[in-house]
Length: 263
Ligand SMILES: Nc1ncnc2c1ncn2[C@@H]1O[C@H](COP(=O)(O)OP(=O)(O)OP(=O)(O)O)[C@@H](O)[C@H]1O
Ligand SMILES: [Mg+2]
Image (cartoon, rainbow, N blue to C red; front, top):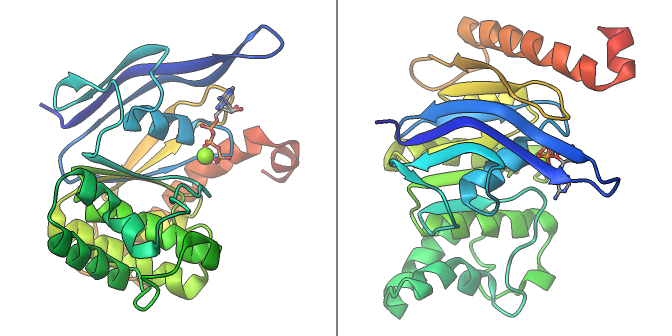
């Protein structure tokens, strides 16, 4: 049985005009345990909507989402979430207290949870920032604390929405390598949204490309099979890049009239 299954999932909202606004339609996908799926597609095609339904924050309007054979009905600590440009840190807790929050709720003893939280703070390169409050941290630092907080719970599944979008290039590349290392070490199943083809090929086991919205769906899933450490110099990298790029180019062109002229 697949670990995660999306069966013909659709989601729509009641628009202010009174008509239905379709966010996603006929989206079907299965994930095995340990898959690392990167999801790409033009702005507004429904990527965040898919992630939010996987997290259990919203229910599909049609179709089904199953995790281990059970319908996803509500959020759970088994699914760690890092959302797009979202500042969901508790402002009254310090950086380290934010990271250990889930462990505290889960009943992990104080000493142990503090040690774990400090390890993850170090992992995201924020050693020495433990006692700062969110208001004293930069946007990129807050984003990294959210990543550390999600990882500290050791979730079965990590749902990440453009998590490195706000980071500088150097930190981003370190975080990409660390995420690959953590994924390798833990076997966590990851769904990772990005607009960056390079990032998708360096990180994932499969790249999913969505069609343009409104009402986007899954257009293609490309398995990334590269041995050893992933290098841009690898000829396979160039081939994958071309393939993903050509799938996505047509969709971006559909989504913008400028793109239609350029394509
Ligand atoms: N709460 C909502 N109410 C009404 N419409 C919504 C709501 N959330 C999303 N939508 C619509 O659903 C569509 C998909 O939105 P979504 O945020 O999933 O796109 P996305 O692929 O994540 O885009 P981006 O790359 O810009 O983040 C859009 O047309 C959006 O306007
Ligand atoms: Mg989005």
